[in-house]
Length: 458
Image (cartoon, rainbow, N blue to C red):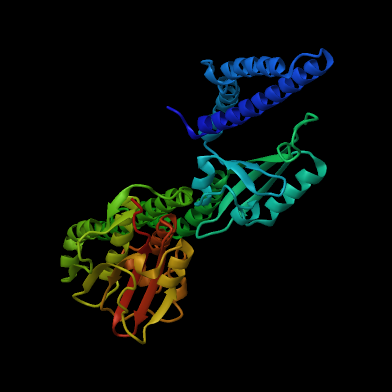
């Protein structure tokens, strides 16, 4: 099959053939004229000789079964094969690889680069892709010194990504007849994502700090009970039963705490890697309602799912288990910390969610802020909102709700089995899904937790 490149080569070959024919005809005509002048050959005979020569040239150039573009095509195709192999190697690399022109504009980039930065990088300046001063300094130093440069930088966003950039100049030796623009110096850039390593380091330190802080009190309490049981309460069955019950409660709380800490650490470890599977938020809400119905029954409450969608489904790109954990944590909190006989409503829709109340207090991100960051209109966003009809949340507590171990009422939280990590887990899961969280509260009218997500692109 003839390609556009083959047609272009054939067109150039035709122009070369036509030019060669005209030159040969002109030279042969001139030679015949000189011969007729010097040898006193009659003009008619000289013209006839020239005509015979022209016929031979025409036969050679136009009637012979020769494809003049074949040698050029073979040479170009050989170079294309080499180029395609190099491009295939570049595309197969799992981390971003970029070829820069001398002015810092991206000439080539592999698919991993587009996936990393979230846009097609070719034709854009490097500083518009990686907005970090360290990157620009590395490029400038590589140009000035003609030596490779290595530096670390951070890509800011809803989740910061820790990266390392390696820049090396590529200088080509030019032949005398080469176009200087074709052999302009280039730079090769490698980018390594160090987020996982950095998060592992942070996770270890956070886990040790959090675990030691939160486990110290229940462990000290249990040691005190054990010491009492081994001492003067050794024979007191009533005291033993009481203390064993408290110890069991403390052990269960520590188990919940460790489970939540490990869950949070796992989410933070993968927070920079957005999920790619397709999940229906309506089905997620229905599963949570079914799972927590017994809990709602124990509080003599109800859970209602309302879809504001015309088609009854809403697909997002997400991790199904994590999205269930988000809705379940928020719904469980609404049941636990609401009034007697709580009524919890789970709303799923698109665009701007219904407000809890005009005078409600709000914290977190708005739909406009999230849509601007995602490059969408606010009407394209997907939301799932969990609202209750409780007493609301105090103004001073709202901004701190997603902090680790922050509790509005410490004693009530512990009494209801809370670990202070539920909303922190919710926040990090939403960050991983490139979404946003907004919290509303109105005194005496309840609270609403709205999770925004981008719709599926498939």
